Length: 319
Length: 319
Image (cartoon, rainbow over all chains, first blue to last red; front, side, top):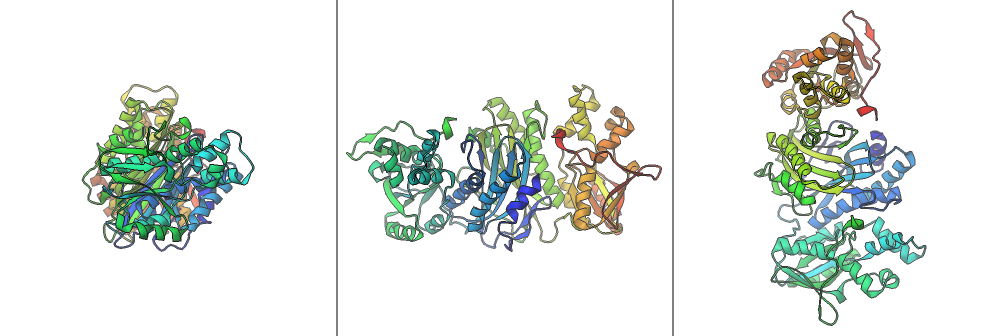
């Protein structure tokens, strides 16, 4: 079983990286990190029914398992290089495995990422991916660099993935706006190019996996500062605004998880550069608030009133 | 949930490695590979009921999850450095998590290995560990270097883990010999020092995880050679020989899995050096056969007859 999945992915992904001295097929891979680069390493697991709904297409599962990990590299400003995949699945269905390999490889190819190791075991459907990327020493984007006076930004739009999940839970819809939101849940786009563009500009960065309030809260805790954000500034897609009422879409944007956008802070003198750079990359970046003294994240509505959000984070399907 | 397990392991393992620029707590760890070293990377998963029996003590589970991965580094001749741990478990029981962290950390400390990333999710009990080690360029032990005329060796003793599993399945025994064999199943010793000592001596090396015949078969396939081994030479522990009849213990030694000894081939002129080096390390190494032209593994009994083994490998609990 092991070799069919791993080989299927390998044959569809980068073969010609000269930093892979020995790929899959021995007890370990042998790799070389480019001289003068640090290695960024992260691992994340997706469990069926916890991190993706039962019934998710296997190609989407393969894509998402890699995407959430590339998002961690993006949040560090690292260039993706290699991945390891540990898959448990209840039984070896060739079509399921083939589609999963296809989804994983589609995203991997976009970054010339090589799969350098894997393990397939029998068990409940679970994917753990470890990713490795490169970053010049001292250039990584950390959570712990936000400073009072920084402007808080977020890439893309927020709340789409939570909306997609809500649509799936109520039975789905066939229209284009629903499809867009569900695609945002199932096929998140890791903001790798944005992360690279932010090196040298952003003081702090994190990816929005658990919801804006929770993840911006991590920046505040690590940086020993507070953040004030304006709910009227939160970037929401037209699909989200069309299909959900204002209060619901606002809640999704504040606390929904799985968007995998980047939230980052920038000193005032770099704001124009950052906005121009990210606009060129296509995802854009929206200014949503600022860093102040204190602790925690405060949210102000359009009338200038402080809100007490009902939910401060997102707990994967309520588990 | 995530931080309690990962933090418990971290606080019990190596803190002072200067190749860990940024440890757990951000989106990724930042690491530096020593100049002039290649990075060896592997990942392996343990699933409850597949790779360890239901009811295994959680400290043993933590130990074994790391041990099977360090065994992969040992088989490459790599020096362990860092690990990532992805754990799924059905519910967060503090005592279970604490013991699991203890078992993992006990083994990690022996190698000054740092835990640099982790992820804890809810799901069936599953542990994926990714390990990273260093090896000088060109010095790694591969499967694909065996040459006709090489002597085939194995470290330690074979068949103990399969015997331990058989004892557990029949309800266990309280005597010291049973305890020894069950310990060999639950707390395998990765042969890291032996792997390092074999650099520059062994032509090919693999760890015995799926059984001698299967794993030596991988060396033969990769090296395009055959192996002939003498069943009378297979190293068997006195506990194994005392508690099982000759045919059973032989079968365990040929086809039992989970021993995590190293099987390797050595040219004639290095045999004396290798035996002396491994004897000094305490695990010893036993000459069990030789590499010849052809393909596959052939087994000869004490009378010089060729055997047709009933099982050519070991399929984790028959799953």
